[in-house]
Length: 116
Image 1 (cartoon, rainbow, N blue to C red):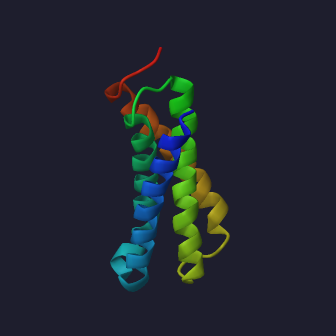
Image 2: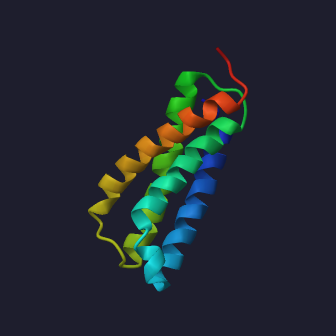
């Protein structure tokens, strides 16, 4: 697994997730889309990991899963601190976003340079 790409994908995903929850704190329409927006941003974080360069299937799966989970955890934690979601959502939201990060990595993998 490429740690530099993992950190970059996780950081970009986290920034996007936090931007969404901060906007949602003041805009109810955004808050109503937290679930789908958060899952979508985790999918993007997983894709970013893979599109950073060559990766094996195993590395793509692991990196996408971790990037999706880390970014979602950051966003949900901020949302909890703002009082917009219950802390119990940390486990469920992070788990679901780990899966969408994996999916994002697997979808993006054919478009990136690969190692067999």
